[in-house]
Amino acid sequence: MNVIVIACNGLHLGFLGPYGNPWIETPNLDRLASEGVVFDHHYPENLTTLPTRRSWWTGRYGFPDPDQGWTPLRADEPILPDLLFDRGVRSALISDVPMLRQAGHGFGRGFDEVVWIRGEGYDPYILPDDPRAAGVSIADEPGLRLPDDDDPDRELWTLRWEQYLRNRTALKLNSEENAGSGRAVRAAIDWLDRSAGEPSPAPFVLWLDLFSPHGPWDPPPTDRDRYVSVEPDDFEAGDEGDLVDDEPEGEDDGEDLFLDEVATLLDVPPGPVGEVISEEELYRLRRTYAGAVTALDRQVGRLLDHLGRLGRLDDTLVIFTSDQGEPLGEHGFVRRFRPWLYEELVHTPLIVRLPGGDRGGSRHQAIVQSVDLLPTILAAVDAENSPFEAEQPPIHGQDLLALIRGRVTKLRDFACMGMDVEEFALRSHYWHLIVPIEADPDDPPRAVELYRKPEDRWDQNDVSERHPELTEHLELVLRRFVAAVERDDFSQVLPLRDVALFPPPA
Image (tube, rainbow, N blue to C red; front, side, top):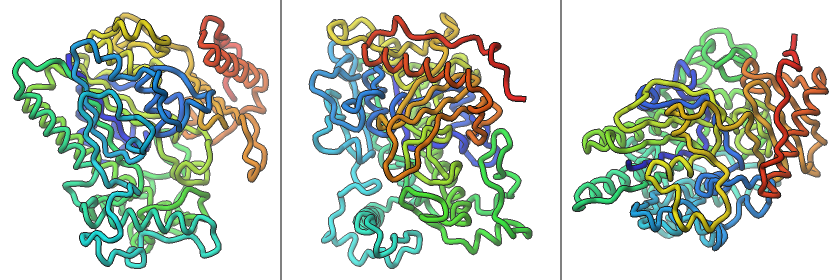
Protein backbone atom coordinates (compact mmCIF):
# COMPACT_ATOMS: atom_id res chain seq x y z
CA MET A 1 0.00 0.00 0.00
CA ASN A 2 0.97 3.67 -0.18
CA VAL A 3 1.37 5.82 2.93
CA ILE A 4 0.47 9.45 3.56
CA VAL A 5 1.43 10.99 6.90
CA ILE A 6 -0.24 14.27 7.89
CA ALA A 7 1.88 15.65 10.71
CA CYS A 8 0.82 18.85 12.48
CA ASN A 9 2.60 21.20 14.85
CA GLY A 10 1.29 22.18 18.28
CA LEU A 11 -2.18 20.60 18.14
CA HIS A 12 -3.93 20.52 21.53
CA LEU A 13 -5.76 17.22 22.03
CA GLY A 14 -8.57 18.90 23.95
CA PHE A 15 -9.61 20.90 20.87
CA LEU A 16 -10.47 17.87 18.73
CA GLY A 17 -13.85 16.24 18.30
CA PRO A 18 -12.41 12.71 18.07
CA TYR A 19 -10.89 13.26 21.53
CA GLY A 20 -14.01 14.50 23.25
CA ASN A 21 -14.34 18.20 22.45
CA PRO A 22 -18.06 18.97 22.04
CA TRP A 23 -17.97 22.50 20.61
CA ILE A 24 -15.13 22.96 18.12
CA GLU A 25 -16.00 22.09 14.52
CA THR A 26 -13.63 19.44 13.16
CA PRO A 27 -15.90 17.56 10.72
CA ASN A 28 -13.09 16.24 8.54
CA LEU A 29 -11.05 14.86 11.41
CA ASP A 30 -14.31 13.42 12.77
CA ARG A 31 -14.76 11.72 9.40
CA LEU A 32 -11.18 10.45 9.42
CA ALA A 33 -11.76 9.04 12.91
CA SER A 34 -14.97 7.34 11.80
CA GLU A 35 -13.06 5.66 8.95
CA GLY A 36 -9.88 4.98 10.92
CA VAL A 37 -8.52 3.76 14.22
CA VAL A 38 -8.17 6.36 16.98
CA PHE A 39 -5.37 5.79 19.47
CA ASP A 40 -6.34 7.21 22.85
CA HIS A 41 -2.87 6.97 24.41
CA HIS A 42 -0.27 8.39 22.05
CA TYR A 43 2.79 10.29 23.31
CA PRO A 44 6.02 11.70 21.88
CA GLU A 45 9.31 10.57 23.35
CA ASN A 46 11.34 13.76 22.90
CA LEU A 47 9.82 17.24 22.75
CA THR A 48 9.53 19.51 20.76
CA THR A 49 9.48 20.16 16.96
CA LEU A 50 12.79 18.80 15.66
CA PRO A 51 13.35 16.13 18.33
CA THR A 52 9.93 14.63 17.58
CA ARG A 53 10.68 14.46 13.88
CA ARG A 54 13.91 12.65 14.70
CA SER A 55 11.80 10.15 16.69
CA TRP A 56 9.36 9.75 13.81
CA TRP A 57 12.04 9.20 11.19
CA THR A 58 14.52 7.06 13.16
CA GLY A 59 12.09 5.05 15.30
CA ARG A 60 14.55 5.38 18.19
CA TYR A 61 14.42 6.84 21.69
CA GLY A 62 16.80 9.72 22.27
CA PHE A 63 15.30 11.93 24.99
CA PRO A 64 18.12 11.39 27.58
CA ASP A 65 20.80 12.51 25.10
CA PRO A 66 21.29 16.27 24.51
CA ASP A 67 22.86 15.45 21.14
CA GLN A 68 19.55 13.87 20.08
CA GLY A 69 17.47 16.97 20.79
CA TRP A 70 17.17 20.17 18.77
CA THR A 71 20.31 19.25 16.85
CA PRO A 72 21.20 18.44 13.22
CA LEU A 73 20.77 14.89 11.98
CA ARG A 74 24.06 13.03 11.95
CA ALA A 75 25.37 11.84 8.60
CA ASP A 76 25.41 8.23 9.88
CA GLU A 77 21.89 8.45 11.36
CA PRO A 78 19.49 6.49 9.11
CA ILE A 79 16.09 8.10 8.67
CA LEU A 80 12.88 7.11 6.92
CA PRO A 81 13.88 7.87 3.30
CA ASP A 82 17.18 6.04 3.75
CA LEU A 83 15.28 2.89 4.70
CA LEU A 84 13.07 3.20 1.60
CA PHE A 85 15.95 3.89 -0.78
CA ASP A 86 16.50 0.33 -2.01
CA ARG A 87 12.93 -0.95 -1.66
CA GLY A 88 11.29 0.45 -4.78
CA VAL A 89 9.31 3.00 -2.80
CA ARG A 90 9.20 6.67 -3.80
CA SER A 91 9.45 9.14 -0.92
CA ALA A 92 8.42 12.78 -0.78
CA LEU A 93 8.49 15.48 1.87
CA ILE A 94 6.21 18.51 1.56
CA SER A 95 6.50 20.93 4.45
CA ASP A 96 5.75 24.49 5.47
CA VAL A 97 7.44 24.09 8.88
CA PRO A 98 10.16 26.77 8.92
CA MET A 99 12.21 25.06 11.64
CA LEU A 100 12.43 21.90 9.52
CA ARG A 101 13.99 23.92 6.68
CA GLN A 102 16.59 25.43 9.03
CA ALA A 103 19.98 25.46 7.32
CA GLY A 104 22.42 22.78 8.37
CA HIS A 105 19.98 20.49 10.17
CA GLY A 106 19.49 18.03 7.33
CA PHE A 107 15.81 17.22 7.83
CA GLY A 108 15.13 17.26 4.11
CA ARG A 109 17.85 14.84 3.20
CA GLY A 110 17.29 11.56 1.42
CA PHE A 111 13.74 12.08 0.14
CA ASP A 112 13.29 11.54 -3.59
CA GLU A 113 11.37 14.81 -3.75
CA VAL A 114 11.28 17.72 -1.31
CA VAL A 115 8.96 20.71 -1.58
CA TRP A 116 9.52 23.53 0.89
CA ILE A 117 6.63 25.94 1.30
CA ARG A 118 8.26 29.10 2.61
CA GLY A 119 6.87 31.96 4.65
CA GLU A 120 4.97 30.46 7.59
CA GLY A 121 5.44 31.90 11.07
CA TYR A 122 8.68 33.83 11.50
CA ASP A 123 10.35 32.28 8.45
CA PRO A 124 12.80 34.91 7.09
CA TYR A 125 11.27 34.75 3.63
CA ILE A 126 9.71 38.09 2.73
CA LEU A 127 12.48 40.68 3.08
CA PRO A 128 11.98 44.21 4.45
CA ASP A 129 12.37 45.80 1.00
CA ASP A 130 9.81 43.52 -0.69
CA PRO A 131 7.21 45.82 -2.30
CA ARG A 132 4.45 43.30 -1.55
CA ALA A 133 4.82 44.13 2.15
CA ALA A 134 5.43 47.88 1.87
CA GLY A 135 4.19 49.88 4.84
CA VAL A 136 3.67 46.89 7.14
CA SER A 137 4.06 47.88 10.80
CA ILE A 138 3.48 46.26 14.16
CA ALA A 139 1.84 49.51 15.26
CA ASP A 140 -1.00 48.79 12.82
CA GLU A 141 -1.70 45.28 14.19
CA PRO A 142 -3.52 45.41 17.55
CA GLY A 143 -3.20 41.64 17.93
CA LEU A 144 0.54 41.91 18.60
CA ARG A 145 1.69 43.60 21.81
CA LEU A 146 5.42 44.01 22.27
CA PRO A 147 7.07 43.41 25.65
CA ASP A 148 8.02 46.48 27.70
CA ASP A 149 10.93 48.65 26.57
CA ASP A 150 13.20 47.27 29.28
CA ASP A 151 12.37 43.62 28.50
CA PRO A 152 15.43 41.84 27.03
CA ASP A 153 13.15 39.94 24.62
CA ARG A 154 11.57 43.05 23.10
CA GLU A 155 13.97 43.18 20.14
CA LEU A 156 13.57 39.45 19.48
CA TRP A 157 9.79 39.69 19.28
CA THR A 158 9.95 42.90 17.27
CA LEU A 159 11.98 41.13 14.60
CA ARG A 160 9.79 38.01 14.68
CA TRP A 161 6.50 39.84 14.41
CA GLU A 162 7.71 42.23 11.74
CA GLN A 163 8.75 39.17 9.76
CA TYR A 164 5.40 37.49 10.32
CA LEU A 165 3.46 40.58 9.20
CA ARG A 166 5.52 40.80 6.00
CA ASN A 167 4.91 37.12 5.32
CA ARG A 168 1.20 37.42 6.06
CA THR A 169 0.73 40.46 3.85
CA ALA A 170 2.71 39.21 0.86
CA LEU A 171 1.47 35.61 0.96
CA LYS A 172 -2.08 36.23 2.28
CA LEU A 173 -1.51 33.68 5.02
CA ASN A 174 -4.74 34.47 6.86
CA SER A 175 -7.03 34.03 3.86
CA GLU A 176 -9.44 31.10 3.92
CA GLU A 177 -7.54 29.53 1.04
CA ASN A 178 -4.16 29.65 2.76
CA ALA A 179 -4.97 29.41 6.48
CA GLY A 180 -4.36 26.06 8.14
CA SER A 181 -1.32 25.35 5.93
CA GLY A 182 -3.42 25.58 2.80
CA ARG A 183 -0.44 26.20 0.51
CA ALA A 184 1.26 23.01 1.69
CA VAL A 185 -1.93 21.00 1.21
CA ARG A 186 -2.28 22.34 -2.35
CA ALA A 187 1.31 21.31 -3.03
CA ALA A 188 0.48 17.82 -1.78
CA ILE A 189 -2.57 17.67 -4.05
CA ASP A 190 -0.43 18.74 -7.01
CA TRP A 191 2.13 16.06 -6.15
CA LEU A 192 -0.57 13.40 -5.97
CA ASP A 193 -1.94 14.48 -9.35
CA ARG A 194 1.50 14.22 -10.94
CA SER A 195 2.05 10.82 -9.37
CA ALA A 196 -1.28 9.55 -10.64
CA GLY A 197 -0.24 10.41 -14.20
CA GLU A 198 2.97 8.39 -14.12
CA PRO A 199 3.00 5.04 -15.96
CA SER A 200 3.14 2.07 -13.60
CA PRO A 201 3.77 4.27 -10.55
CA ALA A 202 5.73 2.73 -7.69
CA PRO A 203 4.32 2.71 -4.16
CA PHE A 204 4.97 5.96 -2.36
CA VAL A 205 5.37 7.46 1.09
CA LEU A 206 4.30 11.10 1.22
CA TRP A 207 5.17 12.95 4.42
CA LEU A 208 3.07 16.12 4.62
CA ASP A 209 4.46 18.21 7.47
CA LEU A 210 2.15 21.10 8.42
CA PHE A 211 3.04 24.10 10.57
CA SER A 212 -0.59 24.62 11.55
CA PRO A 213 -1.96 25.21 14.17
CA HIS A 214 1.31 26.52 15.61
CA GLY A 215 1.23 30.24 16.39
CA PRO A 216 0.85 32.97 15.34
CA TRP A 217 -2.85 32.12 15.53
CA ASP A 218 -4.19 34.28 12.77
CA PRO A 219 -7.00 32.46 10.96
CA PRO A 220 -9.51 34.25 8.69
CA PRO A 221 -11.98 36.50 10.56
CA THR A 222 -14.77 33.94 10.15
CA ASP A 223 -12.68 31.35 12.00
CA ARG A 224 -11.09 33.82 14.42
CA ASP A 225 -14.52 34.90 15.71
CA ARG A 226 -16.35 31.61 15.18
CA TYR A 227 -16.29 30.58 18.85
CA VAL A 228 -16.38 33.93 20.61
CA SER A 229 -19.92 33.32 21.87
CA VAL A 230 -19.38 29.79 23.15
CA GLU A 231 -21.15 29.44 26.48
CA PRO A 232 -18.98 29.37 29.60
CA ASP A 233 -20.32 25.95 30.56
CA ASP A 234 -18.46 24.50 27.58
CA PHE A 235 -15.16 25.86 28.80
CA GLU A 236 -15.11 25.37 32.57
CA ALA A 237 -12.47 23.78 34.76
CA GLY A 238 -12.05 20.41 36.29
CA ASP A 239 -14.66 18.33 34.51
CA GLU A 240 -13.47 15.38 32.49
CA GLY A 241 -13.10 16.39 28.86
CA ASP A 242 -13.11 20.14 29.46
CA LEU A 243 -10.30 22.64 29.56
CA VAL A 244 -9.38 24.54 32.69
CA ASP A 245 -10.08 27.78 34.52
CA ASP A 246 -13.48 29.14 35.42
CA GLU A 247 -14.92 32.17 33.68
CA PRO A 248 -13.29 35.47 34.75
CA GLU A 249 -14.46 36.94 38.03
CA GLY A 250 -17.36 39.33 37.79
CA GLU A 251 -18.72 37.91 34.54
CA ASP A 252 -22.42 37.18 34.87
CA ASP A 253 -24.27 38.34 31.78
CA GLY A 254 -23.18 36.02 28.99
CA GLU A 255 -19.68 35.67 27.73
CA ASP A 256 -20.03 36.88 24.14
CA LEU A 257 -20.42 40.53 25.21
CA PHE A 258 -17.49 40.19 27.59
CA LEU A 259 -15.18 38.67 24.97
CA ASP A 260 -16.17 41.25 22.39
CA GLU A 261 -14.45 43.76 24.62
CA VAL A 262 -11.20 41.76 24.97
CA ALA A 263 -8.25 42.21 22.62
CA THR A 264 -7.90 39.43 20.06
CA LEU A 265 -4.23 38.52 20.33
CA LEU A 266 -2.62 36.70 17.42
CA ASP A 267 0.58 35.75 19.19
CA VAL A 268 2.23 36.08 22.58
CA PRO A 269 5.72 35.26 23.85
CA PRO A 270 5.93 32.17 26.04
CA GLY A 271 5.31 33.12 29.64
CA PRO A 272 3.00 33.23 32.65
CA VAL A 273 -0.63 34.20 32.49
CA GLY A 274 -0.85 37.59 34.16
CA GLU A 275 2.43 38.75 32.63
CA VAL A 276 2.57 38.09 28.89
CA ILE A 277 -1.21 37.78 28.69
CA SER A 278 -4.09 38.63 31.01
CA GLU A 279 -6.56 36.01 32.15
CA GLU A 280 -9.30 37.64 30.08
CA GLU A 281 -7.09 37.66 26.99
CA LEU A 282 -6.34 33.99 27.57
CA TYR A 283 -10.04 33.14 27.34
CA ARG A 284 -10.22 34.96 24.04
CA LEU A 285 -6.99 33.39 22.77
CA ARG A 286 -8.35 29.90 23.36
CA ARG A 287 -11.24 30.65 21.05
CA THR A 288 -8.90 32.11 18.45
CA TYR A 289 -6.84 28.93 18.69
CA ALA A 290 -10.03 26.91 18.26
CA GLY A 291 -10.65 28.82 15.02
CA ALA A 292 -7.13 27.92 13.86
CA VAL A 293 -7.91 24.25 14.53
CA THR A 294 -11.06 24.52 12.41
CA ALA A 295 -9.03 26.13 9.62
CA LEU A 296 -6.60 23.19 9.77
CA ASP A 297 -9.49 20.73 9.70
CA ARG A 298 -10.80 22.37 6.52
CA GLN A 299 -7.46 21.79 4.78
CA VAL A 300 -7.35 18.17 5.93
CA GLY A 301 -10.81 17.80 4.40
CA ARG A 302 -9.62 19.15 1.05
CA LEU A 303 -6.82 16.60 0.98
CA LEU A 304 -9.09 13.71 1.96
CA ASP A 305 -11.67 14.72 -0.66
CA HIS A 306 -8.98 14.77 -3.34
CA LEU A 307 -7.66 11.38 -2.26
CA GLY A 308 -11.19 10.08 -2.65
CA ARG A 309 -11.50 11.49 -6.16
CA LEU A 310 -8.21 9.83 -7.14
CA GLY A 311 -9.25 6.51 -5.61
CA ARG A 312 -6.27 6.69 -3.25
CA LEU A 313 -8.32 6.06 -0.13
CA ASP A 314 -8.59 2.46 -1.30
CA ASP A 315 -4.85 1.77 -1.57
CA THR A 316 -3.29 4.21 0.89
CA LEU A 317 -2.62 4.15 4.63
CA VAL A 318 -3.35 7.63 6.05
CA ILE A 319 -1.77 8.62 9.37
CA PHE A 320 -2.72 11.85 11.17
CA THR A 321 -0.76 13.05 14.19
CA SER A 322 0.96 16.01 15.86
CA ASP A 323 4.44 16.55 17.27
CA GLN A 324 3.22 18.14 20.50
CA GLY A 325 0.29 19.79 22.19
CA GLU A 326 -0.04 23.45 23.12
CA PRO A 327 -0.05 24.88 26.66
CA LEU A 328 -2.91 27.37 26.88
CA GLY A 329 -2.97 28.34 30.53
CA GLU A 330 -3.70 24.95 32.07
CA HIS A 331 -0.75 25.40 34.41
CA GLY A 332 -0.51 29.16 34.45
CA PHE A 333 1.54 29.73 31.30
CA VAL A 334 1.17 29.81 27.53
CA ARG A 335 3.31 28.16 24.86
CA ARG A 336 6.45 26.15 25.71
CA PHE A 337 7.53 28.50 28.51
CA ARG A 338 9.22 25.72 30.48
CA PRO A 339 9.98 22.05 29.72
CA TRP A 340 7.03 21.00 31.88
CA LEU A 341 5.65 17.71 30.62
CA TYR A 342 1.99 18.15 31.48
CA GLU A 343 -0.85 16.51 29.60
CA GLU A 344 -1.63 19.49 27.39
CA LEU A 345 1.87 19.21 25.88
CA VAL A 346 2.61 15.47 25.83
CA HIS A 347 -0.71 13.80 24.94
CA THR A 348 -1.00 13.96 21.17
CA PRO A 349 -3.52 12.71 18.59
CA LEU A 350 -2.97 9.68 16.39
CA ILE A 351 -5.51 8.45 13.85
CA VAL A 352 -4.64 5.65 11.42
CA ARG A 353 -6.93 5.00 8.45
CA LEU A 354 -6.41 1.68 6.70
CA PRO A 355 -7.09 1.40 2.94
CA GLY A 356 -10.78 1.24 2.29
CA GLY A 357 -11.58 2.33 5.83
CA ASP A 358 -11.03 -1.17 7.19
CA ARG A 359 -11.72 -1.31 10.96
CA GLY A 360 -13.00 2.23 10.75
CA GLY A 361 -14.58 3.80 13.81
CA SER A 362 -12.61 1.74 16.33
CA ARG A 363 -10.49 3.03 19.19
CA HIS A 364 -7.38 1.47 20.64
CA GLN A 365 -6.28 1.77 24.25
CA ALA A 366 -2.70 0.57 23.80
CA ILE A 367 0.07 2.98 24.82
CA VAL A 368 1.90 4.03 21.66
CA GLN A 369 4.61 6.59 20.92
CA SER A 370 6.17 8.63 18.16
CA VAL A 371 8.87 5.97 17.65
CA ASP A 372 6.18 3.59 16.38
CA LEU A 373 5.50 5.50 13.16
CA LEU A 374 8.65 4.40 11.36
CA PRO A 375 8.17 0.62 11.78
CA THR A 376 4.50 1.05 10.87
CA ILE A 377 5.38 2.78 7.61
CA LEU A 378 8.04 0.19 6.79
CA ALA A 379 5.55 -2.61 7.40
CA ALA A 380 2.92 -0.92 5.25
CA VAL A 381 5.24 -0.72 2.24
CA ASP A 382 6.86 -4.10 2.99
CA ALA A 383 10.28 -2.62 3.75
CA GLU A 384 10.92 -4.01 7.24
CA ASN A 385 13.89 -6.08 6.09
CA SER A 386 15.85 -3.54 4.10
CA PRO A 387 19.53 -4.55 3.78
CA PHE A 388 20.46 -0.99 4.67
CA GLU A 389 18.45 -1.23 7.87
CA ALA A 390 20.18 -4.46 8.91
CA GLU A 391 23.49 -2.63 9.08
CA GLN A 392 22.18 0.12 11.34
CA PRO A 393 21.26 0.47 15.03
CA PRO A 394 17.99 -1.25 15.93
CA ILE A 395 14.64 0.48 15.68
CA HIS A 396 13.02 0.88 19.10
CA GLY A 397 9.43 1.46 17.95
CA GLN A 398 6.95 -1.24 16.99
CA ASP A 399 4.47 -1.78 14.18
CA LEU A 400 1.03 -0.27 14.88
CA LEU A 401 -0.56 -2.43 12.18
CA ALA A 402 0.05 -5.46 14.37
CA LEU A 403 -2.08 -3.79 17.04
CA ILE A 404 -4.78 -2.72 14.64
CA ARG A 405 -5.06 -6.18 13.10
CA GLY A 406 -5.09 -7.91 16.47
CA ARG A 407 -1.82 -9.79 16.18
CA VAL A 408 -0.75 -8.23 19.48
CA THR A 409 -2.77 -6.52 22.21
CA LYS A 410 -0.17 -4.06 23.49
CA LEU A 411 3.29 -2.71 22.68
CA ARG A 412 4.37 -1.44 26.12
CA ASP A 413 3.07 -0.92 29.63
CA PHE A 414 4.14 2.71 29.86
CA ALA A 415 5.57 5.59 27.84
CA CYS A 416 8.72 7.50 28.82
CA MET A 417 9.59 10.90 27.44
CA GLY A 418 11.62 14.03 28.03
CA MET A 419 12.29 17.58 26.92
CA ASP A 420 15.65 19.34 26.67
CA VAL A 421 17.07 16.78 29.14
CA GLU A 422 15.57 19.05 31.80
CA GLU A 423 12.49 17.03 32.64
CA PHE A 424 11.47 13.40 32.17
CA ALA A 425 8.05 11.80 32.50
CA LEU A 426 6.42 8.38 32.66
CA ARG A 427 2.85 7.84 31.54
CA SER A 428 0.80 4.70 32.11
CA HIS A 429 -2.94 4.15 31.83
CA TYR A 430 -3.35 5.06 35.49
CA TRP A 431 -0.52 7.43 36.38
CA HIS A 432 1.48 10.36 35.04
CA LEU A 433 4.82 10.92 36.77
CA ILE A 434 6.88 14.07 36.12
CA VAL A 435 10.52 14.18 37.27
CA PRO A 436 12.58 17.41 37.03
CA ILE A 437 16.14 16.60 36.00
CA GLU A 438 17.92 19.92 35.62
CA ALA A 439 16.65 22.95 37.53
CA ASP A 440 16.45 26.36 35.88
CA PRO A 441 18.58 28.72 38.01
CA ASP A 442 15.92 31.41 37.63
CA ASP A 443 13.14 29.18 39.00
CA PRO A 444 12.48 27.68 42.42
CA PRO A 445 13.29 23.97 42.68
CA ARG A 446 10.52 21.62 41.56
CA ALA A 447 9.61 18.33 43.19
CA VAL A 448 8.49 15.10 41.58
CA GLU A 449 4.78 15.21 40.69
CA LEU A 450 2.23 12.42 40.28
CA TYR A 451 -1.23 12.58 38.72
CA ARG A 452 -4.01 10.02 38.68
CA LYS A 453 -5.40 9.01 35.28
CA PRO A 454 -7.84 9.24 33.63
CA GLU A 455 -9.80 11.17 36.27
CA ASP A 456 -7.35 14.08 36.43
CA ARG A 457 -7.17 14.70 32.71
CA TRP A 458 -5.21 17.98 32.78
CA ASP A 459 -2.90 17.22 35.73
CA GLN A 460 -4.44 19.54 38.30
CA ASN A 461 -4.08 17.50 41.53
CA ASP A 462 -0.61 16.28 42.49
CA VAL A 463 -0.97 13.12 44.64
CA SER A 464 2.73 12.28 45.06
CA GLU A 465 2.70 12.98 48.81
CA ARG A 466 -0.30 10.69 49.25
CA HIS A 467 1.45 7.84 47.39
CA PRO A 468 5.15 8.01 48.26
CA GLU A 469 5.81 4.31 47.65
CA LEU A 470 4.17 4.41 44.23
CA THR A 471 5.97 7.63 43.33
CA GLU A 472 9.31 6.08 44.26
CA HIS A 473 8.55 2.94 42.26
CA LEU A 474 7.52 4.85 39.14
CA GLU A 475 10.60 7.06 39.32
CA LEU A 476 12.79 3.97 39.58
CA VAL A 477 11.08 2.47 36.50
CA LEU A 478 11.62 5.73 34.63
CA ARG A 479 15.29 6.01 35.55
CA ARG A 480 15.90 2.36 34.64
CA PHE A 481 14.31 3.07 31.25
CA VAL A 482 16.58 6.08 30.77
CA ALA A 483 19.56 3.86 31.53
CA ALA A 484 18.30 1.33 28.97
CA VAL A 485 18.09 4.04 26.30
CA GLU A 486 21.62 5.13 27.12
CA ARG A 487 22.88 1.53 26.83
CA ASP A 488 20.67 0.85 23.80
CA ASP A 489 19.71 -2.34 25.57
CA PHE A 490 16.14 -2.80 26.82
CA SER A 491 16.55 -6.32 28.15
CA GLN A 492 16.60 -5.15 31.78
CA VAL A 493 13.82 -2.56 31.77
CA LEU A 494 12.05 -2.65 35.10
CA PRO A 495 8.34 -3.58 34.81
CA LEU A 496 5.56 -1.67 36.51
CA ARG A 497 4.34 -3.34 39.67
CA ASP A 498 0.73 -4.43 39.79
CA VAL A 499 -1.38 -1.29 40.08
CA ALA A 500 -3.59 -3.13 42.58
CA LEU A 501 -0.73 -2.78 45.07
CA PHE A 502 -1.29 0.97 45.00
CA PRO A 503 -4.93 1.79 45.72
CA PRO A 504 -6.26 4.89 43.95
CA PRO A 505 -6.81 8.10 45.93
CA ALA A 506 -9.90 8.12 48.10
